[in-house]
Structures are given as structure tokens and as C-alpha cells.
Amino acid sequence: MRHIVVIGAGQAGSSCVVKLRNGGFDGKITLIGAESHPPYQRPPLSKAYLMGDMTLERLFLRPESFYGENDIDLRLGVTVEAIDAAGQKITTSDGVIGYDELVFTTGSIPHKLPAAIGGALDGVHVVRGLADVDAMEPRFVKDARVLIVGGGYIGLEAASVAAKLGLEVTLVEMAPRILQRVASPETSDFFRTLHQGHGVDLREGVGLERLTGEGAVNGAALTDGTTLDVDFVIVGVGIAPATALAEAAGVALDNGIAVDGHGRTNVPHVWAAGDCASFPYRGGRIRLESVPNAIEQAEVVAENLMGAEKDYTAKPWFWSDQYDVKLQIAGLNTGYDRIVTRGAAPGPVSFWYYKGETLLAVDAANDPRGYMVGKRLIEGGKSPAPEVVADPETDLKALLKA
Ligand code: FAD
Image (cartoon, rainbow, N blue to C red; front, side, top):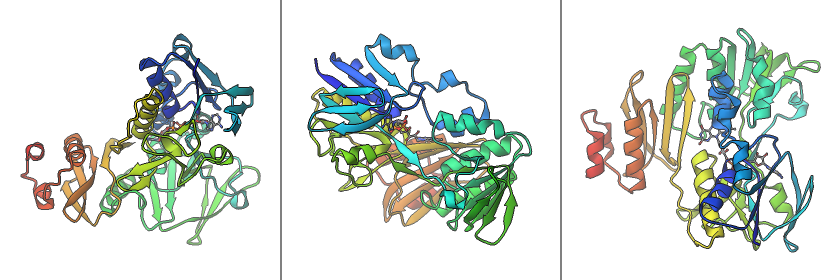
């Protein structure tokens, strides 16, 4: 019987095995996860779950019983330690397992602060897994002083929850503006205003020099010479794809585990999907860190494991929830040279990214219509003139018919 082994019981790993069974694969499936929980969704970890608005069970993608019922051997709390690609077997913390096909869905690892600047002090947290959030959640009490390091989406979402729960929030971003790596100055301005309106002390162009404290963190020195008293710290300074295991097995890397359009690596019978994998995209290669990508890419790998020979065509989209704002992002803005704004806060507002006359991406805040139309235009390769999009009189939906 053919045996498919999937390493990493997260969003992509779970999507892959479910697609295999739903697609009629009747061989053996083993899904191995280092964490002790069945596969769960991570987005609520910095949103509703951290806020206390969502139960643990609702985080799970499927009840744990689903896997047994579908003849999927789910091994939780088991870490894969080495791969013997020539012998087609893996060594886990629980023994050796042979495979016919192996799929990496190992996700990402959050960057941590070096111990030399206080990164190992008690009270310094990252937000990647349930264990991380369960460890920091008791510190979310009214008037506690939290320092958030990093003004990307994870840091901003954590700031939003903390401010809503009445904590005293300071956020430092070493770049000149929050969201600089991923969004336009207009989008940054929108979120700066939003956070400042909720009392967040937002400091841009200011980095962390070091954290201070004996055993537990109690202060921070910033690069502008100021110091802060803090009760705890959340570090949201990016992630790296989890590639060490693959690399040691001879799998080629290129900003993640390098796969072809079908999800195959350079090593026979070894595949990858999700946060850990980079794939061909519009003449280049990208790696996406998002739920839609993890699901869709893993499903394509599953289909190809069943013989489909199908290319993965990414249709990037993403979202973020902060206070009462739902941000929806369609497309990828890489290379944009012009921004068109529609609407204004507190109403629906959207920022449209153009490169020349080509529409690349849309950031839509409380603007589901702008998001939906933008996404369909981008996926259809249509680019309405920027002036037309900017005109408040334009009926967006009509642009789809043009
Ligand atoms: P993961 O879900 O991280 O799963 C990888 C799993 O592999 C982990 O459980 C890990 O323990 C396991 N693993 C790794 N190595 C081994 C090993 N050697 N042996 C066994 N197991 C191993 N995306 C969005 O689209 N929208 C959002 O709003 C959003 N918000 C987010 C908020 C937070 C706090 C976080 C952390 C992420 C968010 N994301 C969001 C990103 C999204 O969750 C990820 O892109 C997605 O989870 C990637 O899925 P994955 O399966 O590739 O990796």
C-alpha cells in the first residue's frame, strides 16, 4: 500500500491529508505534528482567541476524532528529527517511519530577540503557536504595561487586543513607518491614526536597544535614548521558513524549500507546501505566509500526489482585524509606483496599487466591495484607469463588466 507521510500538522498539512482522502486516495496517510494539539487555525491567535472571544475547540480545523475516522494516522507531540531521502525513511522522536512520498508542511519559525539584549528574560513572548498565546494571555490584564516590538500585522493585531483590554501599550517600529515592508504609506497612515486613536503610544523610526531585568523583564532601552518600564514584551519581528530538516536531507532551498509548479522539490518523492515553500510565480519565485496559500498549495500537492500533474496558480489574498476595522488585501503590491485612494475613514476606504497602468493589489479597510471588485479585476488581469478608480462617482461593480 502506498504510504504518504506529511511533516507538520498545521494548516497546510491538514489541508493536504484531507484533500488526499476526499480525492479518493486509499493508501496509508501519516500526519506528524510537533505540537500537542490537532491542526488549528493561527489567525485568531492574535485576534479573537487572544481577546478571549473564541474557545480552544473552535480553533481546531477539525475535531481530533476526524483523523481516526478517516484513517489518517495523526501523530501529535512527535518531532521529525532526520530524513534519509535515499532510503525513503524518516527518524522521529517516536521511531523510524518509511515513506513512498514525503510532504514538508513545516511552516515558519518566528524570529526571537537575541539573549544578549534580553530576549531570554521571562515575560518576553512571540506569537506563533497556541502555547505562545496561552503563556502570554494571563498577562493581558488592565493597566499592565506591554511593549510590542515590530509594527507588522502581528504586532499591530496584538496591540489592538491589548488596547481594547485596557493595557498601556507602546509599540516600537525601527523602520520609518509601521507596515513599511508590506504596505503603502497611505495604509500605514490609516493604521497609525487608528492605533493612536485607541491610545497606543506608537513610535516609528525607533528600535529596541535592549531589554532589562533580573530574570524577568521590567524595562526597555530604545535606540532614541529613551527608557520604558514594562511588565511584558511581545516580539513581532518576522518569521523564517522552517527549512533546516529539508536542507539537511539535501533538499534545495531558495527563500524556503524550493518547489516547482507542482510542489515537487529537487529530491525524488519529496514535496512541500505552505509557509515553508517558495514556488514559481510570474517569472520569479515567491513564498507566501498566509492561510489561503497554505490551503490551496497543499491541495494542489495532494492532487499531484494522486497523479493530476497540476500547476499551482497562486491568487494571493490576506486579511487583518484591528479594533473594528477589517482589512482585506487582494493581490501582491511588489513594484508599485502609484497609489489611488477611494473613500475616507471612518467610512469604507481602499488603497489601490498600480505599476504604471497595471493594477497590482488593493488594501480595503471596512470596504468588502472594494476588496471583492479589486480581487476579481486583478485575477482577471483587468486594470481600470487609476483616475476612474479614484473617482467617487465610479460604480465599482460596473468595472467588472468593462
Ligand atoms: P503552520 O500552520 O505553522 O504549521 C506548521 C506545523 O509544522 C507546526 O505545527 C509545527 O509545529 C510543525 N512542524 C514543524 N517542524 C516540524 C517537525 N520537524 N516535526 C513535526 N512537526 C513539525 N494568515 C492569513 O492569511 N491571515 C491572517 O490574518 C493571519 N494571521 C496570523 C496570525 C498569527 C498570530 C500567525 C502566527 C499567523 C497568521 N497568519 C495569517 C499566517 C498563517 O497562519 C500561516 O501562513 C499558516 O498557518 C501557514 O500554514 P503552514 O501549514 O504552512 O504552517
